[in-house]
Length: 345
Image 1 (cartoon, helix red, strand yellow):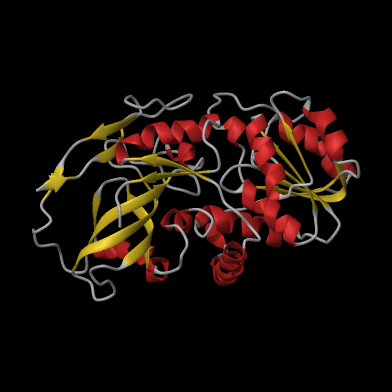
Image 2 (cartoon, one colour):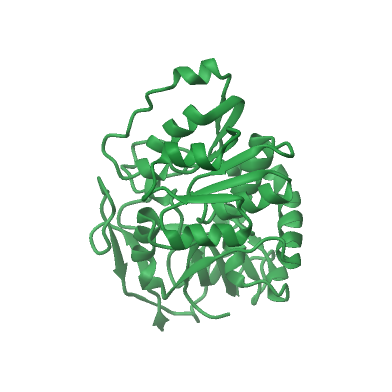
């Protein structure tokens, strides 16, 4: 028997979730020598992704959304890199590395009907790229940045791109792709350290939204107005951007983290400008565009290996740190992509 710690969704929060209340660490054990059902695989979870969208899954299951609610009393789940330790499925071999949606546990038994959500990624073994990158820049967050900017931002060389939450898992890549495509790139973040990092990445300008008036900062850093806004924040930030947007600007809505923990979301008071400026506001869910995955992986892997782009991560050590890691993401306390290292390869 070996340890099999689990992260349990224990209670629906109304504001910020609290470790030990809404998410609980449950100790258990598993027999790795026991037989497993036909078609199933047993995974050793190596690292898992903690992302803002998970707050939306911490809801009453009767409320429908694009992503299913976490079942109460059951392990939470998300994207992870794992290693096959036992297989009763011909598609997976012992030792394979796999990427996909996995319960937040140390060892996960995946029934046959859910193995379709797993992808063998043995290329990660000798890629020279950190394993955690495969759940970040080369995983769902990275593809979100790529699809959002290229498909919906429709960038043209010389345009101004503004990215909120620009030092986060998605934002830092959006800005760097924008520079590769010849855009003038501006970002905002919640600390002077994060602002300095954006400038290191090559952003043309950046500001701390906590210490500067957002409207004045946009006027200063985007003197030619905003052509593309990659929206990660919502609320007052979105309202300010609409005021500074150019005619025919594209507002690509990826997330609105400032609203996730509010019982009463903030209103937007200037929506008439959407009509007056012929603005295009579009939301998207990256999983709806699987046809872009191949090109995304090819392009971003090349940019990463060539040094054209960099990617910062915050790594929490140990699965028991998962609840605190998620709260850090929601409060902006982490820096870059938040991952949890569960075990060594």
